[in-house]
Image 1 (tube, each protein chain N blue to C red):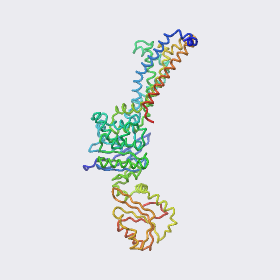
Image 2: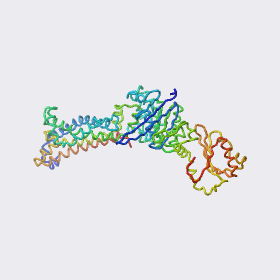
Image 3: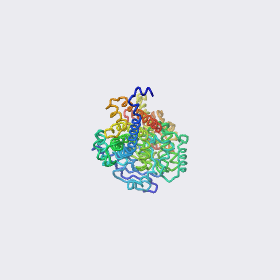
Image 4: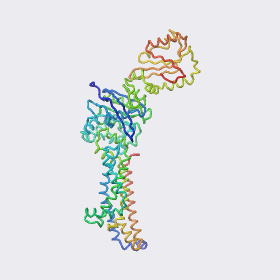
Length: 354
Length: 227
């Protein structure tokens, strides 16, 4: 284990027994999160991702495996030590889980009671936290008076009350509208940058991961089927599920759907081919289309284009119809591949997306 | 006063009886409410935290509490009054009188209150409990600072309900010489065909019940911030 590994899950199994039925929610999962990571765990509901992260602060005791957080064996801890360790692992939830009977300030203050701070210090701390999440003027309101996004901000302030080093976000943006989601994700990213907070982000939306994560794991049926840094996963997804998630996020799915529907109008044949071009990083900037025409007299008609900036790396997707002589087209493709561009010929009759 | 005398010819001559009976009813109700309140609250919280999925899940404790509550809730109160007599004698020294009535009243109402508390606490969002656990709260903190605080409005409503049903029970205390307004209504009003006494006793009970209901509703609304 390297010095910078802050969360280490080793061969974690979680099995539920319910009315004679056995459900293996998490199967032999190992996961290392480095200090300062924003680690995304993506999967459909029921994939076991929530169960997996609940193991980190032992809200869920695993059936087997090892959990090391900050060098401490979480599973071997006595109740009192566990409570102490939990103060350093913040958590936010899909439904915010605020206390309705307490004011906003009181909700944020809750984790501080019974701690070492004096009353005055606590008050100051609460004010600072509310300022951090931009809700100072709501201090005396009750949760019922707040919007969803505001509630989640309060929940974040509460989670940060004891200066945790880790923040677990369990579908924290899933109940929010897109604009609010972006704002909350921005806040998480800012906290990651300013406080050095390590974030583990559970979600079923690849868009959220795309916005802020530097690493991703994809979960299916209790297993991590693919993992890696964000750019690699987005540029070279290996599993079908990963590709599905990415295509939904980049909206290339919808674009291809529309293109396929009017495939007849494209007049595709040997001289007119439908092609998807994918490129990462610098090659985005090359005047590719012009170059193809100059060198091979290949005319490219752009049907769809999208560039994502992931971790400051551009990732481009183009869907074009290339027109030209068959052998010239082949040469043009070879030219693209030599330039580090992925070329995939698309067949409108086959709905599988590359 | 003249009008009152016209409609309540017998009751008007029994001022001291009514004062005494009202005092006995209030005495039995308050005394029982305090003790049964504490016992019922403890059992209700116990049921909540030990039930399957609770923060101190414990099948044995839960089943014992659950069965006890069911057992005592299924005994009709008039029968309980008689059955419990030896125990009452052991505790207060006598099995008849107003104070003696308090023992069966406690045993009759505490399990009811426990169930009410359990229902009130069941309304506290499981996610909020989980959030408290996630910030490092232990069971004691979760009971006092989350369950009882978040469930307060419902607890007040349940308490009002229990208090009213308790007044209902005190009306039967006359069976063992416990006195009270219920006793006055039956043993004087009904038995001597002085129905104005019965009606006045009933009216006083209604006033007490409405007062409790009103105070409870106002209080519950005051602490309820959930909407």
